Image (cartoon, rainbow over all chains, first blue to last red; front, side, top):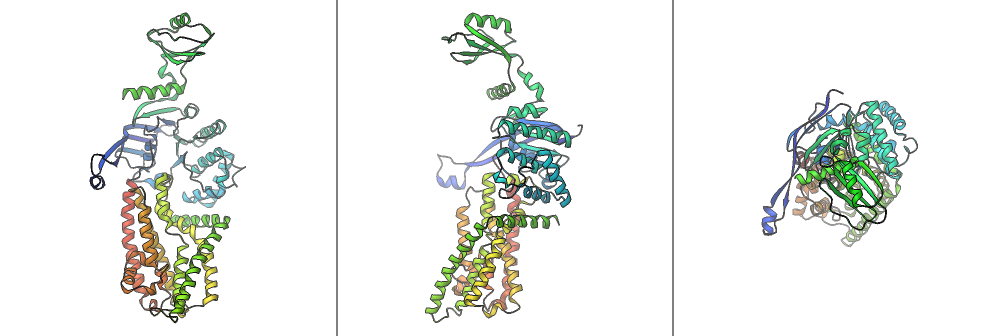
Length: 332
Length: 266
């Protein structure tokens, strides 16, 4: 767990594109179009130790997938440096591909019309494994991923959950040291999600595979990753152990007030307390404990509302993450 | 060695895929029989109206020339343009770029694998049928025919793939390559001798067919004519020249294209 698998230093990616200028004529637009530039990833740096499980999260358009694509050598950085297992992805893309596995949740790498075994054999040959190694690895993965019941079925006939297991299995054919997953649980039901997470934890434990995943699913982050990097507007805004993430907004407490009868009015709240939800049967407020204690807040709230039930709790991880995104957006 | 093993695996896998779905083979066979059959009936009538000889060629030679064009087209090399465009547009290119393979050679073998099964089955069936129906011209029975035919077929395959790869690679810069594809494809069809046999081309058009890459990619259609025996090495030389030139263009374009990838990220 000591050496770094991934080192990212001052990485930047800019996309430039031609944009039509309404005030210019069509000839000017055709031959001298206006160039616009988007900074997708802006000067980010981080490193990942061997065997770590990293969640790389951020809102849509934050730069997550762009970063993953630069890590795998698919996209060329505008500036900065990436080193994966001592290799430069832009120069050693093929060499690096032998060391890493990739799963792009929204794209399939399997052969749709043929049984899954054919896809696995195909990848084995692609990764230059001997026939014996291929058959041995297929047996291992079949057992590990419980593929036995559908390994002989054409891939297009698999359910989404089965297909995603198969996708991950295929990406592990060559025993990669790092697996990069771009939204692997997208579209899966809760059972399939849990099953996939358990499998990833298992391969991390048994094969010491470094896991680097992007996801919008808080469950993936909570149950799978020991460290979370949050990116927004192309900039890393948080990089901390996942268990510390929930503590980020520990100064905020949530209080649910369930109405005895319907709430008719929503009076102005004192400093340190603000509404999060205003409904006739339920009100949720956020208390900033730096400004006002929970006890004082409760006293005030109970004097303002006739309640049947009260619930005090800290923010869940999803709320924390949302809060981080929102705070960062306001800051920008 | 790894490249050869992978190429064989791709071809074997796709042949297996095609064998599992015979409907596509039957559709290909019906399409070729209809297109080529109608043309051959038309040609037979036209030649008959001209006492069996047009521009020094007979129906037998022209029929086999046209058949070679259609047989070659079953390999579907042209589809590589659209496959590359789809890879770029859908972002599938990122899946292939993350594998330890050369994207273009993977796509080339994929295309060969996609067409080879239909090609062999349909060509064998059609060749036997055509032999029984109209017979073989004497130029196809001499010893030189088969090796030079196979050589020009191989070079024509490489040249076709290079032409259509160049068109496909344009999709890294422009959104829709279909208009360019259409122009190139029609140039290959016309100059390759699909609907009008090359023996019937007027002199200028024949020269263009000879010296352009579009015509050169279809030199299999020339192999049946008497002139092939004396000038085959010149035509093979032209094919080699174009392969070198277009190969260099593909190499440079792909180098630039890799840096221009912008699959939907972020």
